[in-house]
Amino acid sequence: MNTLVGRNNELKQLSESYESEGNKAIVLYGRYGIGKTTLALEFVKNLPAVYYSARELSETEQLLTFTAEEGTSCDTKDPAFSYYRCFKQAMDRNPDKKTVFVFDEFQHLMSCGEGFKNAFITLMKEPETEGKAMFLLLSSSVNWVENSLVESMGTAARSLAGFIKLRELSFVELLDRFPKMNIRDIIYAEGILGGVPGLLDYWSEKLELKDNIIRLFLSKRGLLRGEAERFLKTELRELPAYNAILATLAAGNWKLNDIYTRTGFSRAKISVYLKNLICLDIVEKVFSLETGSHDDVKKGMYKIKDNYLCFWYRYVFPNMSLLDRGMEKEVYDNIIAYDLDDFMRDRYANVCFEYMKLMSDLGKLGRKYEKWGRWYGKAGEIDVIGRDEEGHTIVAFCSFKSTPMNSAELRKYRELMRIAGISSDETYIFAKSGFGQDIKVAAAYDKIQLINMDEL
Image 1 (cartoon, rainbow, N blue to C red):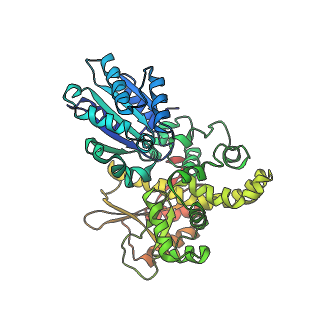
Image 2: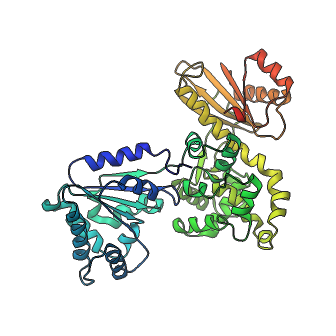
Image 3: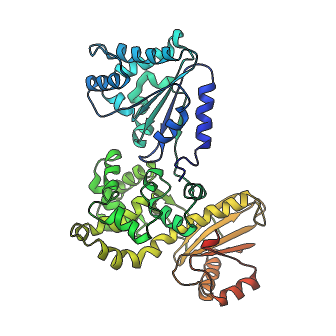
């Protein structure tokens, strides 16, 4: 299994920064498990480098820990001098090359005192060290980087050359990450864990879907059973309120009024919480692509964007009492097994959406479509809509049922298009379990492309 896929652009950015003139400082950030440390260590594996994982410590203990790991002495009365001396000693070991200083979770260095900050400012501006250092500053706290970093760093922030936010891996990239897994298993793994490398590392290619879910989420020692709240506690206060909102969204209640009715929070308070969750890429506000009809469109909807958190709040959080009693098999058999196809349908639609955009970019469709979206109606959803500059339209529907798709579902899709006021030039239908003979005949007549999930 290749653990570093989909990061070529980021590696290129880091290499270009390293090769450029002068000292450089780059902030590399993203949620816990997204692969920051793996990327940083891959980048420096053939370069002179210092790596330090900062901890929540007092300034004295932080300095003692750092210098001890680097094998240097320190003066706790003057932390700035000690940090600076350690930087200098590292650079002197390789005077002909730029030294890379990787500080993981560097927000802990900012919060414990001024020593590191002052040494960093001195080194970045001192003529004697010009062009000899690159700082790679890593953080798992997206909220802190995007909202508090500049204030916390003060004048030191002026020395930052750029920010790189690591995104989740796309489905296409997961095909490279799991070359021995079939499409179906990868879709389930991505639908449940998202494209977070640190979470995907726990998924076993040798186990069946049920066994993976029980082992990771439902058993008392499940590796991911408590990860959701641990992750949220690092980013958010008032966890009880966020639990209530996320549980509501995970249950399929996507409208602001649904959250208001369920939680009893004021709409103003809910809006603030949702804004914070959106900033963390946990929740997204979804809109329907503009079509010819407005009457039947659902408006003002919010969905959990993070697949792992959505799964956790849908199945683990509301069943914690049963799980604490050791009833993990019962929870899977009586709750998850009956509902998983409904949960996975939206995730499968995202995969199909990515597939259609990729095929358009590769010139594999009838036209080049630039504008993409979905339509959320009261009677159902149109999973993929694409438009080109001349107004031609392509649509796609996705079925994640355990039985082959039939012509009745095709009639439903046609009715949704009528309600939405859409006339398509190309139509695709994706199905988890294939297609019945009746829909194959109808699709051939209407020139509809049918794609089985295993054919992706």
